Amino acid sequence: MTTSVERTWQRIMALLSEHAPATAREIRSPAPAAHVERLRSRLGLELPSELRSWWAVMDGVDDQRDHGSGNQSGYLLPKDYLPLSVTRAEEEHARQSRYPDPNCCTPEGNHHKQAGDGGFPFCTAVLPIGREIGGGLLCVDLRPGDDHGRVMEWNASEGVYRSDWANVTEILDEIAERLDKYVHDREPAYRERRPVISDGELSWP
Image (cartoon, rainbow, N blue to C red; front, side, top):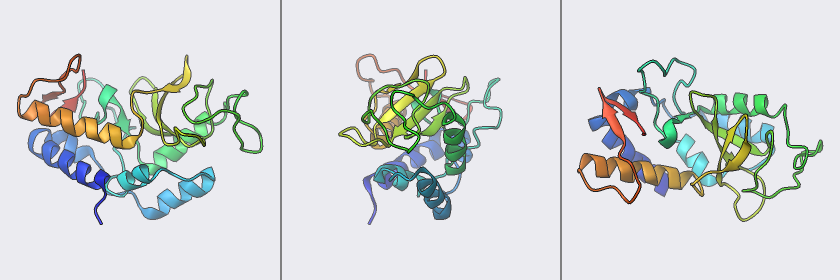
C-alpha cells in the first residue's frame, strides 16, 4: 500500500522533473534496506515510520560534492539543507556523538530529556538527516516522549533546538505545497517566500 510519504514524494519528484530537473537528477535511488537496518541496529532506537518511508523512495544526495559557488542543485530541503544518504546520516551521527549533552545522555545510552528538548553540544538520540553548507544539521529526535520523531536543528554554537517542523512528513508536505504554488503562480502564505528555480536548480530564499 502506498503511504502518504510516498504519494507526497511522487508529487515532489513530478514537479522537480518538469521544473527543476537539475535538482531531480541529484536525488539518489532508494536507500538499501540493509543500510537502514544497520543504522537502526547501531542506534538501538526505532526510526519513525515516515523517515523509513522516505528513505525507501530516495537516498539523499551526494552532500560532500561541492554544492557551493553557484551550484545549488542539491538543496532540496527548505533552508537549503542537503538531504543525507543513510550512510552519511550514520557518519554524521557518529561524528557528533563524540560530544554528548552531559545533562541528557548517559554512558548507558539513556536520556534524561524528552524528545523535543534542546541540548548542547549534541544528543546521541538525535539523528542527522540533512546538512547545510555551513555545517548545520537537520535532525530527527528519537528520544521518547510526545515529540518522538520531531525535526530538530543543530549548529555548533547553539547545539540542538526545535525546528518549525513536527516531523518529516511536514517537511515533505511543505516542499510539495510551495513548489505547487510556484509552478501555478499562486500567492504564497503570509511571510512565506517563494522557492527559486534557476537553470533547473531549486533553492530556498
